[in-house]
Length: 307
Image (cartoon, rainbow, N blue to C red; front, side, top):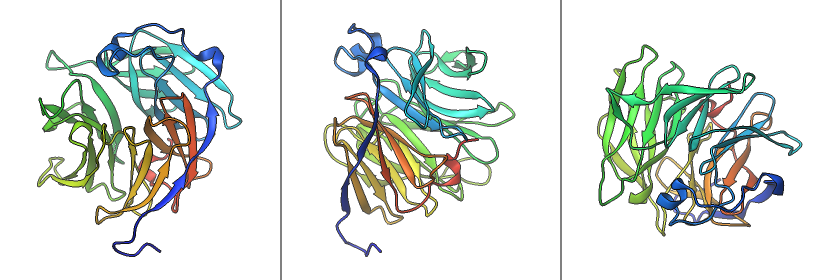
């Protein structure tokens, strides 16, 4: 039991799997790395973890436009490579992934057919800044972030809500680098990672789908702020922080209860609860191209379960 004001437990995560050498892209510049990673030559940059019901883990490789499937026995398969920059993913339906593509907007990938196509590339004929991550609620409403190059110098990042009938609404338009997002188990609050503000925004969602009284819930520190988010069944928020190489677990008072640290690089970009072992968390570590894992105190919330 964690008492109020107790220091968080610090635990080292374990390496679960490393991208095989055969899939490490030949060193070459990419537009995404030039804009977002100071021109580094990257062999991969893993993001967007999501599980299917059989326990396969799907991840994206942003700069090289790739989507991988990793089996429970750690076999990597390249499912597709295309002209895009895929980031966050969620299931749109059976065998179809919805992808937040920084270059192309929202894309859909039919795995069995190996086909990728546009889902939503523009809003009222205006292109997005650069979409980043996404999540669904139980009624089929899609929430997604439009980050682009926004930050404290330009706090104009957006959070959208796309209803099942196609109505697209802007919920927030003043976020310094909106990134990961997740709903609480009761779907009354949407948490949004404001990466360049180094904080988490708490966004109450009203019954009519609008938001009100948005506030800062948690403030981090370091060279890069919160990235991917997840939620456990007890309402604890999990935060991937790639600047610090750790995963935070935060209670409803905004206090860290646990910190899992990376044994490899500091690029802990995103995380997902397993479909087979619901208290097992898997983390994309982009610096080394590895998947980390650790056991959480509680199972993952249903909002993050595979369809």
